[in-house]
Image (cartoon, rainbow, N blue to C red; front, side, top):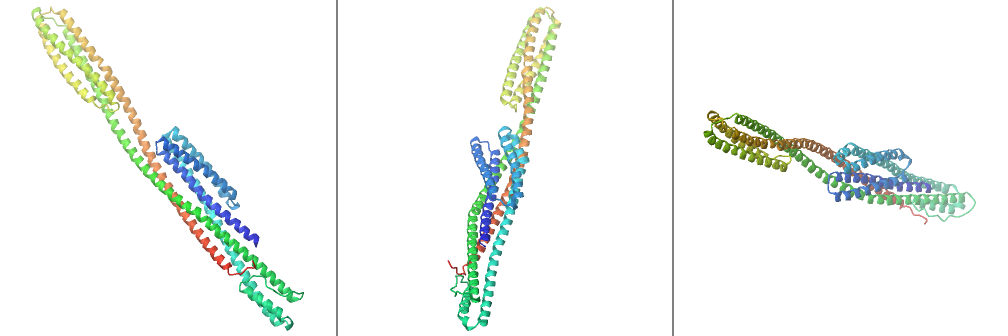
Length: 508
């Protein structure tokens, strides 16, 4: 009986320790995963360093808890524990890979967490839950064993008491008067035994049959006394173990509530991050449209300048074939010089505007804002140039009719025209560079748009995984509440058993 009580005590103590450790494993694993999610959603380096430290602490505690569990596990938990170790190794491998990606490839870290680390964590938590459920089943079996042991002891006491009472009554009527007094002592001892008094009775000693009865009765009282004492000690141990479980269960309940609040905060952060990702994608789309408009405007300006150059070439060709009289040549030459001066001023202004357009495009970067204003000015100057060329054509026609003596002056006018053409041609290069820059900006904005879209999709996936972790945390909270109820039930049953045992009076 003593060995059975000691075994029950050891089983109960180990059960308490295993339940506590399995709950702590669940909390530490989810706490480390929550720290990783917080690292994914923050860009502040100081906060990330602090989160890395907390994450390492939780992982170290998780390893320590698993080692402690290995020391107290029973044969019935070997298979579940091996599955736990395998899932823990897979989870740790995926977890460390996600941690490395956070610093090396942040854009891939969220996707890897969703595709690799989160499923591994779910498998690990399922293994912990399976181990915890197996442990609860073992605890229920141990509880049933203790209850059966107490009931069996009571049945033994009642049976032996009834047998002793019947035996005393039979002996009272069978034996002669010479043994009435010893038998009365035996009957009194049996009555005390039936009332729960297990102290050693004071019975006469001898070598006859009555002495054998008194000796057997004394041994019965001693054995019952030891049995009741063992049951009492076992009940005390069960009650103490139940009280010991209540404290870590309370801590686990507090940790579960804190974990639920942390998941809620992270979920809010991820929602904000998701909304910002959508806004970034919309901004990238708008910037892409602006860059496309800048690119189109640059091409249009380049084409218009080419048209102006062609018109200047035509004017130069017309001037080379002009010949006018000397008298009219002076007046016409003056007009031509004035018109050429106007063309030169227009060319210079066009050059300055083209330069301003290049500066504005460089400042605007991706959007090319402001370039449309400069392009409008270029179109206005081109219109003025067209008007001037019409006037030049009229003057040249008049010079053709009047004289062919202004060849030298026409050559000089042609030189001035060629300079104007050269200046206009020089404007093509910066406009070409502006067009190329706008095209490059458009390509980069397309990449940015793809990245923003992928980021928004990843944030949605992370949000889904956060909700899944929240569900797991809620299940864990329900499991802990069930464990607390089981502990309360065990404590009440132990108190009832102690109350029943206390009805007996011991010899010590």
